[in-house]
Length: 228
Image (tube, rainbow, N blue to C red):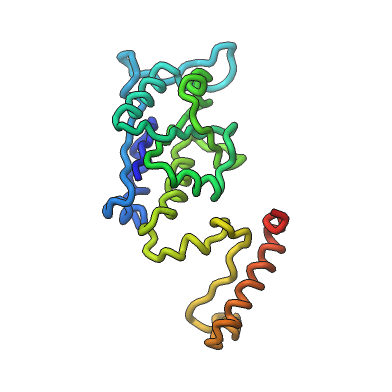
């Protein structure tokens, strides 16, 4: 799967992609990631990508004239122009359903903003899929791009090694329950012991305990999931 990340700060992603499962996914060819610096499409000697907003107000706005040509050039690098995602607080809130939707794409472009956001004409001309990762403020779209990339990557066959891992995760397809409590060695620590049923070897009773535990945890922590 091809990811094209369009950003002013490609260096932010270097360590992120060089560790753990993501590094393995890249090395084994499950995902391909390219970076494109919006500043390379700036049209003045100072490589200006932002300016003061018309009408006044705080902050700076990302200019339309470097952003749109940048995205269009990246789209034209492949026969498939890809699915363009733009990160904005006004977008649909990202969740597992959207991750499962996006993993069906062969190519995804992740457009990361900065400052006070993009000139409206970026939206009007490019018609991106607008996505938000939550109701809080970030410095830019790069962290949001990491969240979306990792969530999608986990759903690509072969990436996790164990094909059942993604299926049993909370919020995965058909799953509206939180995961059950998990335990490993030692059996006892500071007076806290592993539930006896998990040590019994009775798989039927273990499955029953896990389901009951998932229901109870969901009822306690996320009752809204049960309503769904």
